[in-house]
Image (cartoon, rainbow, N blue to C red; front, side):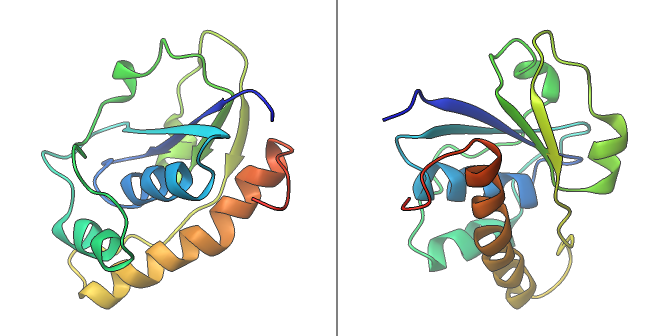
Length: 141
């Protein structure tokens, strides 16, 4: 088994896409990655639709809250994933070199629950394999 890799999922508000990605990566790649999320301009709370979409998939939602990127800047990050164009443009420089990938997802804020579910499913279908490939984790995960 490889060493635990730390993945930071970065978005603007850290209230939807990056929160869902954090939970999904921690669940689907459990024991191989430690996913964190943060925002360049965090919102006051995690979007209700994101919480509900995660619950519908049987994923944990306890303890989720938006964090500023400054709260995780000192972490030993192996991979930074930006999930919105704004975060990609304003991604900070980390003290230690880290691989970076950009995989944007639609922002479902203000849309029906089905939009949050579609984004959740897109994260699982596209982001999990991209992280697995970038970090060279076993395809059997």
